[in-house]
Image (tube, helix red, strand yellow):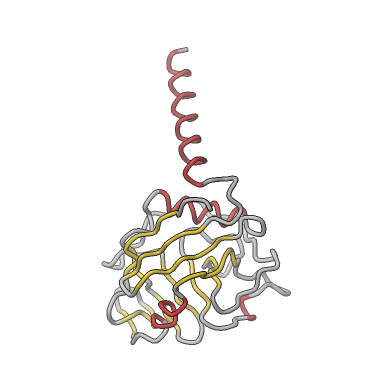
Length: 193
């Protein structure tokens, strides 16, 4: 009986802390991203992408995005990050989430979306900023990439990121990796308005 009580207590504390940190009643939470190139603030849309927003905020409030890199940059397309350390080590991944790309939000310039593999429900921690109107990433006959918010401050920072020099990186095994690392120093959930 005592063990059962302890387990219930731990579960309630864990759930309460997580729910409190994520602010489930805040429909448009804002997150500040402090990068090595400047500050970006995004406003998330919990009405249209509740699962994606909660997933992203879980990584934010646990500090999992701190000291990661923007590892893939394609000018006139996307700036992607959130998945790797500065040493190109893959960061811890939580469960994958259901793809919410059919929520009506489009992959337009200035939006934030979840990266995924080719299969639809494989997004977890990596995200990207659209630096162009990328209608090819929207759903149609195939699943798209779920947009879950937009930049409200710091678009010029993302635009500058999109222009950095990239090259093939042997450790990563792909193109479009910034030659000089761009760090996501800290991600923090801002107080509700």
